[in-house]
Length: 259
Image 1 (tube, one colour):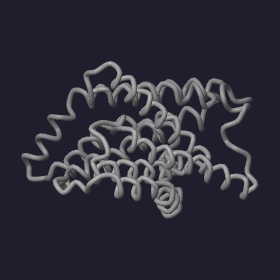
Image 2 (image 1 turned 30 degrees about the vertical axis):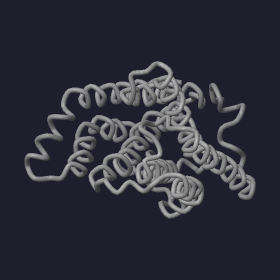
Image 3 (image 1 turned 135 degrees about the vertical axis):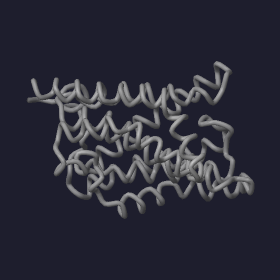
Image 4 (image 1 turned 180 degrees about the horizontal axis):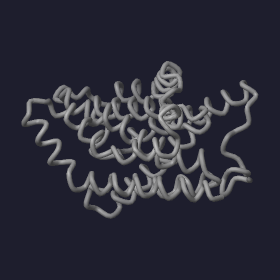
């Protein structure tokens, strides 16, 4: 119990410090890097990595350097994550290609920031660190471990609209996405690359075909997204059954794990 309290304290303190630094210095760091000659996409990534130093320091404090990558799920199979994610998101690619027009005005920097950096940083910071440290290494169950991160993750997307109904939809969509990605990572043996590539392809196809002005989207966009989500859940359950493994998220791990 003492170790649980220690990890919770370090994790929440580090994430709070990261959020503080991100709010105060992210734009200035990014602006300085762009002025120094880096393009916007690369500057975006490096700025997140710099403000995320408290998170990396916390992982080193909790686990030490030898377990650094493993404790964040970075040592999982990237190939497996890529193939699974591409298979699950094919309905979005094919559906959007049929229904929407390809956005010829999209730039490389937009794709870097909206697909590559968003997928990598959000999954690394919110799923691998904030959720992962609390769920994997403490007695906290899935619901308390995922709740704070999912609420914050959803709140950070509310800049996309000023209308209450749209804001509600964006919040529920992104909150559900945060819970889904946390569940997927857990069921794929805490392999971070599974949610990273899912997040990447879902964002990429959404952007390439301008499926929506915000994370909520319209009816057609969400039909194909719902098919993708259904595939993610079904194929994950099938994978667990074929491997003979029990679901990681079950009655015994929902609220508090046993000693």
